[in-house]
Length: 169
Length: 82
Image (cartoon, rainbow over the protein chains, first blue to last red):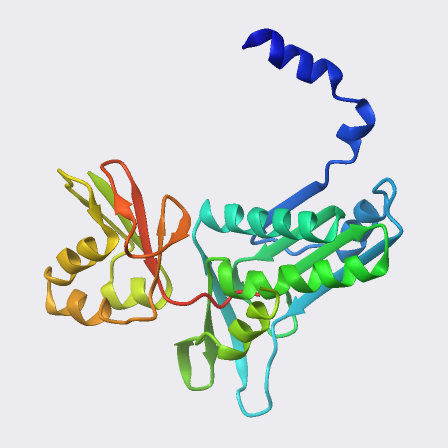
């Protein structure tokens, strides 16, 4: 067993290791800097396109939203996000993927989520970023609780998010 | 023993984030759900929801999957992140 293993390691060209996609997955209370993430993605070797998406806490004129509270499943949320990112990287040949999801109490207009991808071309970068968001919405264990003028309520899952995710299958 | 976790609206309704349960022989998640429903009217009501998702050892799973001693099982409502 051992000689095989050593041979595999020795034969692996250095260039091939560089081409493995880079993943940066974070679930955190703290805010994030789009600029920092962009710079990190833009430094990815052999990439010609970076697409980033930022989701914000959205208020509505009739709602008077005070805050959104985000709960996660420590351990599983990170794993689920990495699985989604890995699947997207394979499917769209992404060179780097960053996913940051915030948890805790967030005020209207604050940043909740960031998905950033680096790829050789724009088509795969756009598609990869959208794929990750659509899967995140339906597969990653995260739950929103709404605090507004009427009190508090858990946000219900939307059938439209499910439909959006299923279009990739 | 197995560890059972609840999240979101389900956790709040049950007023329970986690519990430990003895498990002598492997059983399906559906069987485990039945046992949990028998704990109290509160559990029976909250766990009657067909939309609930479950995860075995932090992987989404179906209710036919077998649970073994040492496993971590989680139940939660459809997710609403992003």
